[in-house]
Length: 131
Image 1 (cartoon, rainbow, N blue to C red):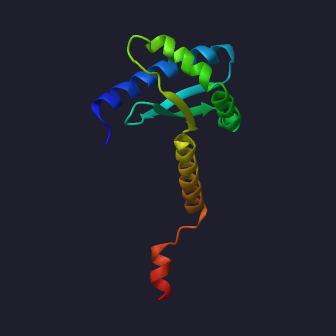
Image 2 (cartoon, rainbow, N blue to C red; image 1 turned 135 degrees about the vertical axis):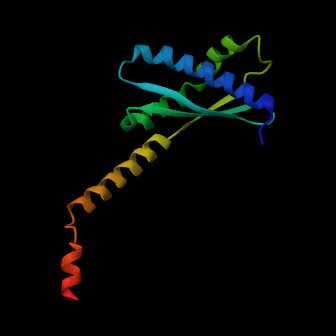
Image 3 (cartoon, one colour; image 1 turned 60 degrees about the horizontal axis):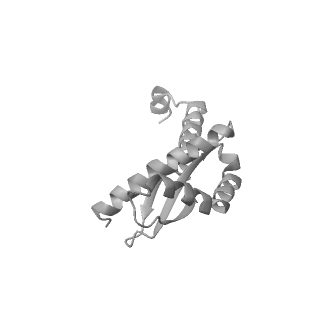
């Protein structure tokens, strides 16, 4: 269970990371990076950030690039949080694929509805006459 302090710091990190990614993605049009959730360790030394990346086809490539520049992102975040945190946590980024998972479930449900609509509906009167 996370403490109140962990929750407050996680929200602060989420907000600052969102601002950093928003500023960076303005330069590269067509890419959207959003911070879904941040989880911070009990000793406040490691923060795991889960990112939603659009377009999802390039998500692995973009996440790899973000992880390669994690130290620069941590430095930027340190400039924003220098008066609020004593130690800036180490950042680890992970892909949040929950939106892709929801899209897949929605697609499967729509396919199932389409198959049911295509199947001929059995007439209840004909079924009773055959018996």
